[in-house]
Image 1 (spheres, helix red, strand yellow):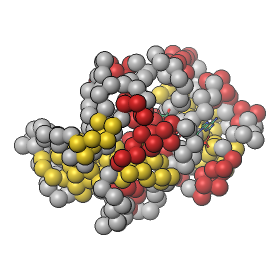
Image 2: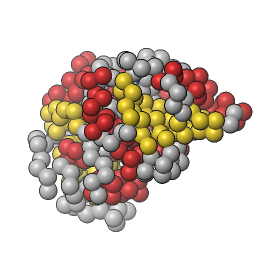
Image 3: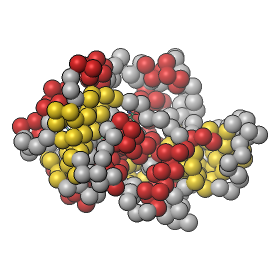
Image 4: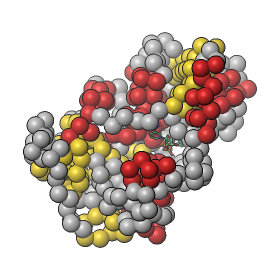
Length: 331
Ligand SMILES: NC(=O)c1ccc[n+]([C@@H]2O[C@H](COP(=O)([O-])OP(=O)(O)OC[C@H]3O[C@@H](n4cnc5c(N)ncnc54)[C@H](OP(=O)(O)O)[C@@H]3O)[C@@H](O)[C@H]2O)c1
C-alpha cells in the first residue's frame, strides 16, 4: 500500500516520507479498513515529535515511534475483521480512531469505531473523531452543561472549538466563543450567541460571568479563567499548546486539579476517551443537523507533512484533513 512512513521522532518535513509499505495484519479484536480520509489534530504533532515526553510513556514509543505514522482519526470502509469482532462487517462504512491512518489501509479496534454519519463525506467524517469526542466529553461529562447555562469556549475557531460551540448550543446553552478577528463571523455562524475577539477585548476585564468555561486555546492563566467563572462554576481545561518538552503546557491543569478541592469552583481537566458509544452520540447530533464539521482544508496523502505544518501554525478554521483516496462523494 501507499503510506506515510515515519521511523524516528522529529518535525514533519524531516521524518515523514511517502512510501510503499506492507498493509497491516488484522488482530483478533481489530478491523482492517481501507482509509478514505484521515484527520489531523494537535495530537498528530505530539505523536510525530514524541513531545512532550510523557506521550512516549503513554504508548507511542519510548525512543522511536511505535506506529508506521502518526495518523489516528479516520473514515473508511471495512475490509476484514478479526475473529472476535461481531459488530462490524466487510463493506461497512465507518469512522473513528485507528493506528497509522495516513495510509491506504489501517487497523482499528472495533470499540473505537462507529458507522459513518450518513450525511457526511468521508473527508467530513474523518474530521470528527478525536476533536468532537473531546468537545462532547468536555461539555457533557466534565462541564455537566445544562440547558440555559452560560458557557464560555476559548479556542472556539479551532478543531475542538468548532465542535464545542455547536454541541453546547445543541445542549441549550448560551454560548460565548473566543477567537481572533478573522474568525468572529465563522464562530457566530456556528451558533455562538456572543463572540469575543481576543485581539480587541480582554475577557478578564469584562463584566460577564460563566457557569462553565471550556478552555481550549490561548493558555489564559488559571487566575483569569477563575475570574470569569461564577462562584460555583466549572472550569474544564481541555488544551493549550506551549513548547514545554516535559509538561507541554499542562502545568495549568496540574495546578487546577490541586486547587479545586479548596475552592467553591470546580476546576479540572481530562483526557479524551475514545469509544464507539460517544461516536454514536455524535452521529445522532450530526445526522439531526445540529453539528456539522468545519473543514478548513483537505490535503492529499502525499502532502501530509504540509497538512501538519499548516495546523501547527495555529490558525486553521476548524479542521484539517487528509484525503487518502481522493475526494469521495457523499454516499
Ligand atoms: N484533553 C484532550 O484529551 C484533548 C483532545 C484533543 C485536543 N486537545 C488539546 O486541545 C487544544 C486545541 O486543539 P485543537 O485541535 O482544537 O487545536 P487548533 O485546531 O489549533 O485550535 C486551537 C485554536 O486556539 C485558538 N487560539 C489561539 N490563541 C488563542 C487565544 N489567545 N484565545 C482564544 N483562542 C486562541 C486558535 O484560533 P485563532 O486563530 O482564532 O486564535 C486556534 O484555532 C490542543 O492543545 C490539543 O492538544 C486535548
